[in-house]
Length: 254
Image (tube, rainbow, N blue to C red; front, top):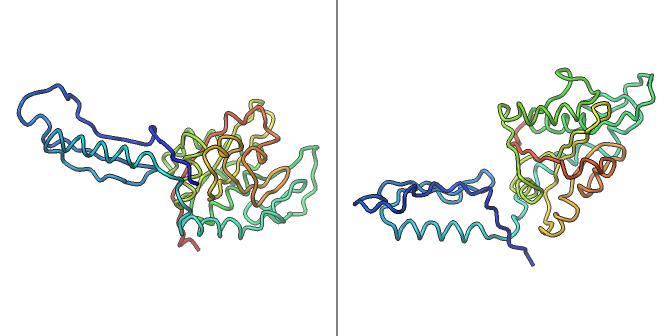
């Protein structure tokens, strides 16, 4: 059974500014529109009367109380690209890797670091989908996830990224075919953060609240599919500070 979801933070209703105005034509020419997850659900329309305005608001309310978004063909196409990356055998921890391919470079490790590659996998996967996220050579692989967190917040909007409020909206965005990233910054600047890619799927709102949407990731352990909570298990202090960002992919990218 699908679980209704209400998204007050997604609705951008251009409402009447002064319903108390009684002058003739006070409601004429006002445009009302509704958007959900970046998609137009109610196109902007001119409201000629108060009853028409109320009718439109009722329609917006009906659309805002909705079942889980099904996985679209675009959502499946994005997942096919991500799963083709071979993250279960590439970008493995404990070696220096080529950020684009995940193959070990053979370079010797000269420190005691864990050498995990969540941020490099994210950069490589999104490059395949025609989406830019901070990556080498603009930033080294060292502390890249922390830097990506800052970049997404400060500069990501100029590159087409948009923040999402929570895991439910992240799941729905992935289901309609957007790329969605989950990222946290380590509160200790000397330690790495973490980043994972949200998978399309049909989790209920209750399950997402408990364990987050499913993700695909590299890290201390690489996963083709795991829950957000398990994927970020090495960062328990940052779990509640995870942020979600979304971007439209280019599925024609070669």
